[in-house]
Structures are given as C-alpha cells and as structure tokens.
Length: 225
Image 1: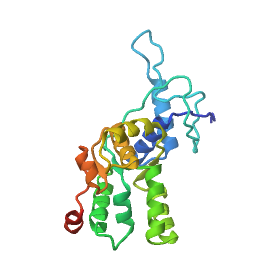
Image 2: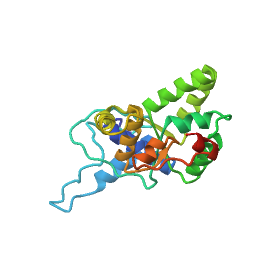
Image 3: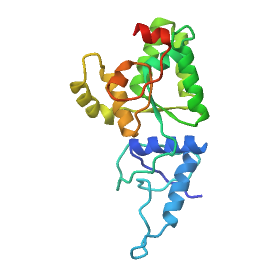
Image 4: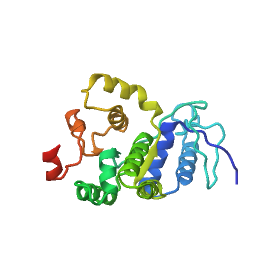
C-alpha cells in the first residue's frame, strides 16, 4: 500500500465531509475513490491525464487522512452533494436541546425530517460556541456539554465548519442589514449563500426578512416574537 498525504482547502474538506455523509462512507474512502477515478480518467485532448478533483501534493490512500486547510499546487473544487444542506442557527439548536423551550417540538420535528431526508445540517463554529454558551448560562454546563457531544459525535447529521473564509461576506451583510441583525446571523446567511441554499435551521424572523427560509416556529412563540 502506498502511504501518501492529501492537502485540501477548507472548502474541499467540507465538501468531502458532505459527500461522505451522503454516501455513508468514511472520508478516507471518498478521497481514495476521487483520486483513483481521476487518475484513471484521460483528457480528450492529447490523451493527457485529467486534473484530479483534489488539491494534493502527494496522494495518500490510508484509513485515516489528515485534512489540512492549505492551498497546494492547484485548486479544483469538488462536486456538490445531491442533498442540499441547511444551515444551523443558535435559535433552533437551543430549542432542540431544551425540552421546555416553546420551539422544542418544531425543532425536534424538523431535525427528524432532515435526518430521514439525509440532508446535512451545516454547523458554523461560531454557532456552536454561541449555543454552548447560552445553554451553559440558561441551564448548566452539564446540559451544554451534553448538547456539544450530540452535535459533534461521529455520524451526527451536523457538520462542523470553520467560518474564517466567510467573515468578509458576513461583514458586508452586517453593514447593509438592519440593527436587529447580528454579525453571527450574517455569518449564517453567508454560509447559506456559499452552499447555494436559502434554508436556515433557525427560528429568527431576521432570516425571513432577509430573504431566507426559517423553520416555522410554534404559534405561541411566533405571536410573542
């Protein structure tokens, strides 16, 4: 077996996670298949090998692959997954983790439907931190840690992503939108734009007002909002 190392951009690492989730495979298997298929494909022009769908310095076909957010050699984006993702917001995650919350049932029902439809829920690192902080203050650290474990556990429908590459787009939205919209909200919307979706796993009306689709909140909460 040849042991090699794959270098990926942040975007490619996210795409591989989504494809692995969709196909119920390990990320290493997805990378191996992409690399193998690409190397077997010949370009119709001059019979040369086609460019592979990954950025890599040295191929690595092993069970565990380190995903490194680094541009190496060339940058070629991978294909998107068939199941369009939905972007998580703190409002729905807190409701999902709190059984006494007004929107607990709608959040739980939505999560169940998304799981059955095999739609991944993109979880920005900022949203994870905000959610854990709120749960820790409102409930307890024990509740917050339990929620974090559920969100981050292997096989979860939630896929954690970094937000550094989305900050500039979020700041632009933050500048243009109303005072009621937070920078965190803008990060969620910017990530939604990146994944070409308008669907937000959240209840805040700011998303709807900005042209995105939020979860339908409970009647009691909606009237009070």
